[in-house]
Structure formats: C-alpha cells, structure tokens
Length: 121
Image (cartoon, rainbow, N blue to C red; front, side):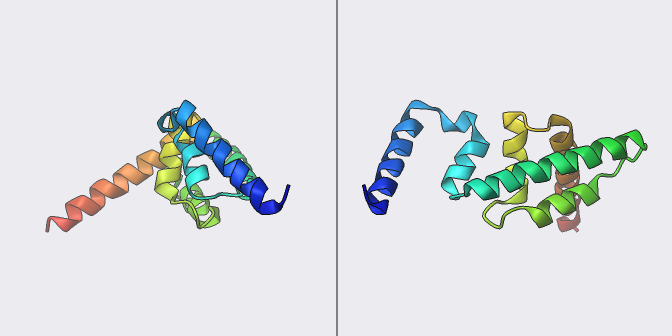
C-alpha cells in the first residue's frame, strides 16, 4: 500500500469514527484533528501542561495568587496551530489539569471583562 493510499484510508477511518463519536463531547480531540496537530506536537502540549501544573502547585503552596506568568508561558509555548483560549476551554471540558485550567480561565474571563469595560468609554 502506497503512502497516498494509506493517508486516504486513515482519513476515511477518521471520518467514520467522527460519525460514531460525538466529538463535541471531546473538544480537545476535535481541535487536534481539525488543526492537524501532529503526534509530537500533541506530546509537547501534554509535557508543557505537566510542567506548568507542577509550577502551579508550587506557586499555590507558596501562597501566590496570580498565575498570569504561567498563562503567558502556556500561550508562548503552544503550537501555532492552536488558539490558547480555545485550547484552555477544551482542556478544561475534557478534564485535563482542572485546577490549572480553572486558574487560566479565571484570568481569561477577568481580562475579557476588563477589555469589555474599557471599550465602553
């Protein structure tokens, strides 16, 4: 089987699976598929999350309340294929690092409210 035929079969199989599985329940997996994230990019994401979660836990134990630096690091290290905010919400929905994702979402929501208020002036 040639490379093109293999890719066509893989695409067909993914299409069939997407009909069986409600990908809306798995927004991170859906995003990975739609954005053509590679295996190595996905593994890099998981390693990044693991490192950031350790830093988050250390900062929490030290009594820090602002985790913006971790969010900035996440956004800076994330594959260009993925939108940081959408990725965070997808990770949260699928249950990846719930405390860290909740902290990130709190920062994102706060920034959105601040931006929205600022535009009213």
